[in-house]
Length: 470
Image 1 (cartoon, one colour):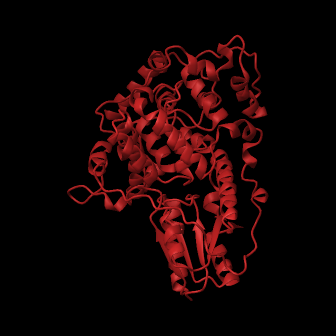
Image 2: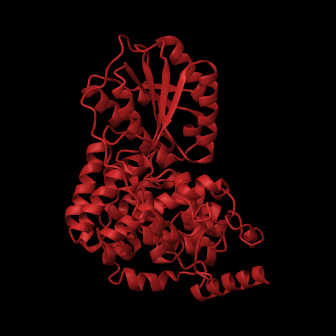
Image 3: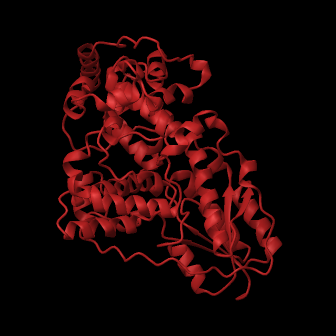
């Protein structure tokens, strides 16, 4: 079996460099069959991330073709597809990079058990994290529930040097049949919004590396003080590429460490943001209920509303609060949203509108091209108050106050709200082209009145919190 092919099951690891699974497979010298499977777990993701994943798959397939290899595309339950490929090719093993969300872990465990029972080697490798979640423990042997102690535990840990990209991939004597990515219609649910979002995407490994290099050379120095101002181009925007594995966190970590050692003032804060993502995945591994249930069980009786007309106005960027609406429109136009803005819109929905955080969680999961299930879940629970947070108070962000502080000249709000400009440009008007026709939104309409006075919304949220505590 030493000459039989190895199936490399790619998922959210669509790159060549610093790829433990790929490097170890190449080292065997055996023929390699790269495969991407559109299984039910992948089919279930939202419109924007599914569309963006399709772009990532197509870009990675082109990269492999330039190396004389291929990316075989198959659709169906993962185990069924892998069994079929093993039968067709005589493959003697299947390798993949680990995933850490509940659905993927259940799928991968079942696949590994079934393959090994059938005598097929099945190996999982380090996934898309700096540290495997079970390796970071408190002094008592448990896991960290608060971010700062987690950061202190890993900040000085050794992170291995990134692995080089292989120069070639051994090909099999014959290639199995493959689906066409176009036939999968990964962007079908995006409809006309895909054309609007496309110019804002940086797809593929080369684009991700360029983003990292640009950030380190021109932005990291001022990152600490500039990152909270959404009108400034001060962030790395690497969340999109990390989501699809077009760059590895180790590559980002070492670039940030070099910048820190060279005296870049914002480098450590940048590294902290990378570790925030690690912390989110560690929590999802240890407490998988964070994906859909209140992380703090004593929040089960908080009187949040389910989906409602106010929440629908929030989704459409029609709340009458300019900072909130600008952020929601930014997401619809670009596929992403500035991190400060995510906190503001999340607080407004869950506090001022008393709407269940899961309404926002699901909307982000449908609209973000950088959607990350762990970061999305932890972010929403943190801002709602039911998640991991060391603060001893109930946090309510004031959108107007936040706008005054972080968008003092209203550049961000004017960039995405056409109603605030006498002569709106093409970018701000593109939001109308991206929205569903069923919303009936057209340029020229008056800006909506606020859904609720901010002081009343805050008072109502604090009253609900006081009642819950009582």
